[in-house]
Image (cartoon, rainbow, N blue to C red; front, side, top):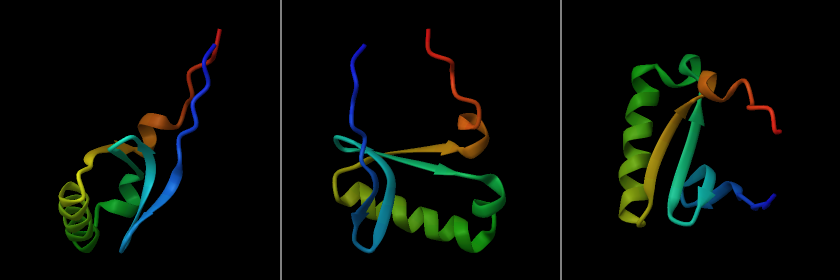
Length: 72
């Protein structure tokens, strides 16, 4: 089995990226925290900034990662 190091909370001024794999920025957010109008505006600005920095952005809901897949 291969292991990979995935950096977390990577600084990309003025933001932090939850997970980074190469130039893929993965944001893991819960609906309760990120559904307000102000937070949606913040997320759009963050996405635009990260794209300018060369990142592709993937937003993942907290509920979709709440139950890890058992390893066999």
